[in-house]
Amino acid sequence: MFAIDCPQHRSRVLVSERRIRTIRNTERGILLDVECWCGRHVTLRTGRQETAGRTRMALAE
Image (cartoon, rainbow, N blue to C red):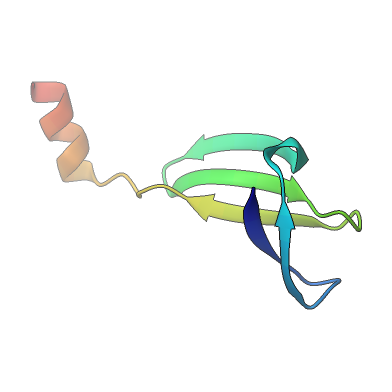
């Protein structure tokens, strides 16, 4: 379980991983589209943003 800030409830709500609708890996981090119990969709960003320097170092190794 994890907490989301639901605009409909105007508070933090605990939801299970079953409420995750999509996961997208982007250059800005991992985006989770989560559906609250009330039906409202919330997007969370997690993970670290990839930097050009780290990418070049990883490719060189």
